[in-house]
Every structure is written in C-alpha cells, then in structure tokens.
Image (cartoon, rainbow, N blue to C red):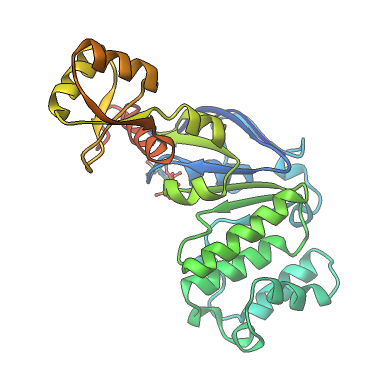
Length: 299
Ligand SMILES: Nc1ncnc2c1ncn2[C@@H]1O[C@H](COP(=O)(O)OP(=O)(O)OP(=O)(O)O)[C@@H](O)[C@H]1O
C-alpha cells in the first residue's frame, strides 16, 4: 500500500503538487491520471526519494522510502525507461540489479523471459533498443526483486497494442496476487481499461478519486435531441454543466432522470438518453482539469 498525505512540492513559484492525499491499495491497480504537467511525475519521484517534498509525507507499506533497507525488494520503480545506461546490454542492467539486491542469478533469465526480451535482444546495447524494448526492460528491472508495490510512470509509452495488452495482463495478475500497482498516464483510455481505482490530478491538485466503477457511474449523461441547440440552452438555464461531444450529442453532469425532466418541461423531444460512462469520464476529466487552472497557466 502507498499512502500519500498532504503532499506539496514547490519549484520556486511553481506549485507542482498542491496538498494531495490519496492511497493506492494492495490488490488493486490505481491509475494516476492527469494531463501533461499535472504533477504525476513529481509525486512519483517524491515517493521513491528522488525529489524532496516541500511538505507532507509518503509511505510505502507503512515506511518512508529512505527507511527501506533494500528498497528493490519492497518497491519496483519505472520512472524513465530511457534513463538506462545506453552502453550496457539489457542482460547487464538486469544482472546489476540482481547483484545489488542479493538475488539468485537465475532471476535475470527469468525476468527476460517474463518481459519477452529474446536472448539476442538481451545481449544488445540498450542504446539500440526501441522505446518499447526499454519499457520491457524497465518493467523487468522493477519486478526482479519481487516487490509488493509497483510505481510506474507512463509504462505504456512506446508499447505497441500487443505490448499494451501484455502489460495490462501482467499488472492485472500482479495486483490479483495482492500487489499494489500505481501507474500514471495522461491518456484516459489507458487508465480506464486497467485501473480499479482512479486518482485524477490537474495542476497539482486532486480533482477526483475513487473506484473506477463509481466514477463511471457518476460520469454524467449523454443525450441527443432533434433540436440540440434548444436542449443545450434548456439544460444550461437549469444551471447544469453541458458540453457538446463533437458527434452530435451533449454531455451533462446531471443524471438521466433530471435531463429527461428538463426536456419534458421544455417540450423538447429526445432521441437518446443514457449514462455516459467512458465518454462521460473523458468529459469529466476535461472539465475537472480545466477548472483547476493555476492563475496564469496556459489552458
Ligand atoms: N525540476 C523541476 N524544476 C522546476 N519545475 C519542475 C521540475 N519538475 C517539474 N516541474 C514543474 O512541475 C509541474 C509538474 O510537472 P510533472 O512532471 O510532475 O507533471 P506530469 O503530470 O508528470 O506531466 P507529464 O504527463 O507531462 O509527464 C510542471 O509545471 C513542471 O514544469
């Protein structure tokens, strides 16, 4: 389990992380979702002792990262897959990790196999790896110590669709065996398909968090009408948040019963009315993150 309490990080005048509190629970995949510059990487770097917090605390399985005697056995980390030594082979990088953590030699070949790097690929210099191969190697390095907690910053970057599917299954299996997975992404869909819990961050602040199923349930309503412009006006007049989805529908934060009532009262015939679910989560994500703009920050 990862516990983040009232965490704040300032870089000069930039408030990169602004008083955030959340937990990532054991046995669950927690998606850390936010647009570019939201503060995800900064939060993760603080978690693993690479950046010092301005205020607040992070604990991993109840302890601070700095107090873990052999951190690789407790928490697997993948922050920047390109940060590996370009002149070493994948096998050498894994062997270094294996020695550093005092693990059996056989673990290296086991991990290469687990992330589907062939013996030939494992012998090549990392400088010649594609981004997807680096991500696989990074995941192997994170997993080699069989830790209880995984912290992965944008792990799907550079993976092809088959690679993304592979990673999803791997992380699902890991969480199902009781592990804690925290993974970040700026892509809603990536998080939506894999996460059990979602923490949404925008401009350093948490804008929404909870179980994915609950967030989907609360993700508003999609509605279509013959006269869409009139419907939009009617919903807006009722004080509801409304935005066109771009494919001839409107999204609103209200539930379907209220939208139906507004339409009836206004004499507007609807052609579709349903829970927005995935599409709604996206609208919610855009709405929530756009209303937490820092002063002067670009939209
Ligand atoms: N070392 C640093 N010095 C100064 N400002 C920084 C530093 N690192 C991050 N920032 C700022 O902190 C804010 C949060 O950045 P961060 O990298 O944590 O966001 P992110 O959510 O991981 O974004 P992305 O999805 O683009 O990786 C940004 O405004 C960024 O410019």
